[in-house]
Length: 271
Image (tube, rainbow, N blue to C red; front, side):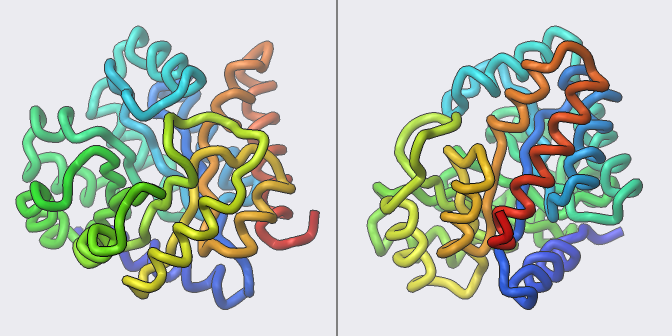
């Protein structure tokens, strides 16, 4: 089975054809449990997300803020394994028919084996992988196997990336480009603002790939602001926080479904 990169491409193109940004949600696998994490992904799709990124929990998540670190810690203490991440992708995709990616640091893939990881992700129906800490110049082996399996390779660009570097990164990527709206770790912010808009402008000058913005978006107004200049709006910490703050799992699922609904209105400009 080839991967679902085409489904991802079609989903992003369909959002564009509707004159709106895509809503991309992030949730870690195994949080609060493996089954609970799968249910949470189904809930955000049900609420209006177009794409979901499944986080592979890591013991040293250098780019993640305290909210996602807390969720990762819960998942790791629960014993989550790569097999559980693959099961999460498979069940979420099969239940919804929508594109599901994995977001992971490089070290777990390197230890697991690139060929094995890409084959299993494609077999699970995954659309691709977001690799925030894999340098493009060290990505040839990954891209060879991802291409063979029909998986998107999404790289992250930041406001500090110079134009020549942006061109190098976007030329190597597929699916979409993840534009980190600001320097620093993940988390909700008061403002997402001008730095992100300028980064999207500079990134678009180097590629025809959709440019999706993450880091800092937590409500419908911010989603609407980012949707004004980006092809996709990526929201992670705000979903995880709703789950963490909920008194029980059922309340958590209701909360993330509701947030997805609010953000879906935001990306459509109907707030």
